[in-house]
Length: 195
Image 1 (cartoon, rainbow, N blue to C red):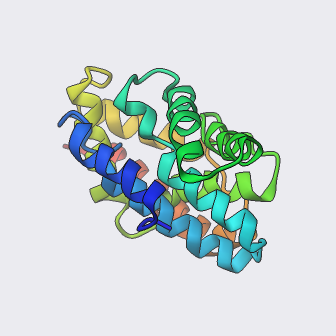
Image 2: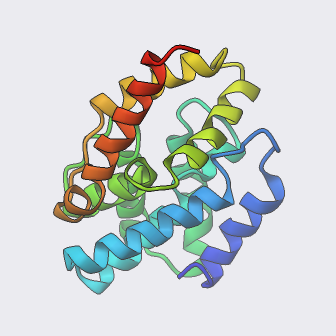
C-alpha cells in the first residue's frame, strides 16, 4: 500500500515539503503508524477492504501538517479528498478514510474497530522500547514550535498524557499497555529523583 501510487504521492510530499522543525510529525512517524496499523489489523482480523482504507488513512493522517498545525486532521482530509479520487477512490471510500483520519484527533474517541486501530497505531510508541527516543523527537518539535519550555515541563506533559491515554484494541491492550505503564513509572521516577 505504501508503494501504491496514492502512497508514493503522499510520502513524497511529506519527504519533500514538510518544514525541518517537524522532528516527529514527518515521514518516519507516518510509516511507523502505517506499519503499526498493518500489524494491529492482522491481529484484529478486519476485512481486506477495511484494511486497505485503514492503511490509506494511516498514510494520510498527518499530511495536514503540510498546511497547518491546528486542526491538521481537517487539512489532512482536505488533501485526501483532493488527491484520492485521482487514484480511483470513490467518494464514499474517501469519506470513510476521512472518518478514520478524524478519529486520531485528541482526545481520541474512536467509534469503530478500524478507528480504534488507527488510534492505537498513532500512539503505538507509548508502549514500546523506543518511547524515549521517539518522545525526544516530539520534544524537539514542540520546542521548535514554541509550545514547550524545558525538559521538566516536557516530562510533566508526558506523564499527564500517559495517565490520560488508553489503548482501545485487544491487541494493543495486550502488546503495548504493560510497557506503557513501565514507561510512565520511569518518567515519574525521573521527576522525583534529585537533579
